[in-house]
Image (cartoon, rainbow, N blue to C red; front, side):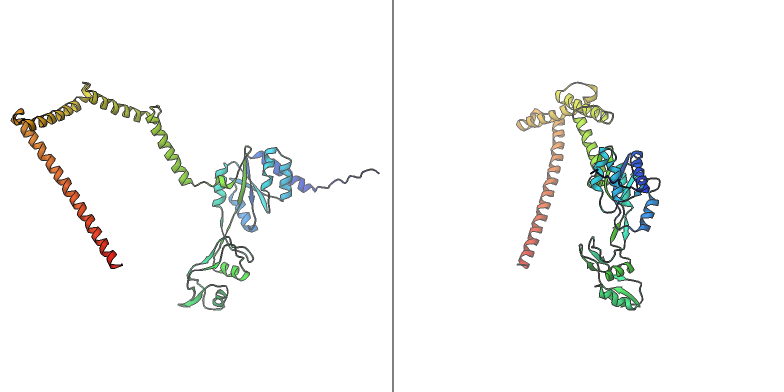
Length: 339
């Protein structure tokens, strides 16, 4: 018996869709797989318009996207695993980090539908609602919102968590939250992965704290400059600091080694003068007649200045000790008072 082969008939529009996806993948330097679950059609159209000039959004059936990937290169086939539930493709010439930031910024609050799992604790804040007294008061109380009438308006008496994260929101609560303009859902294009030059970038890599990133770069630059100066590795940014450091070190060496150079003569004379006074002071202690009257007067003035400085330091220390003792006595009194 001859084998009978049944050729699968693929509609022309599907073939065209697959070819269009393949052409877009070739045209753009990178593309991403995004989730569009839960986005109303009207909001999705607005997102598509907002992206014009920056990125191109292509919504297609998952089977057609997968077929287009499978008929492309091995790198493109890496993106198969990110096709799940409602999927769309986004094509751009931006880098992956800018694309991720763009999509995150485009997300907006949206009403929650009945039967949806709360993505976070849903909180209704205390305050006026703008609704006049009427049936809405009982409807709010029925869904757990503490409502009352104040000054002819319906108000929420206290801030209340009406649904915990992970709980299913009822139809009545969802409707009331919408009326109160409490939008707990954050709706937008959910980037799952981006492919650029054969490399797949996922959100955990693309989500960068820009403030911390810039701070880290600034710290790295400071550390690199410090290392360059310490290692005497000349660059355009470090050469001034290296020269200044070398100047300071050479000056200190010249003073220490008593190198007679014009630039350090003042420092050498100052050092010699201090050493002379130290020798004269030591000699005067052994024999008062070892120094002349002028030198005695200089030593006396120096001793007086030193004594005033020492007295001030002692007085400051005593004052600090008195303050500490006063604080300790106060704490002891408090300890006795409270047992």
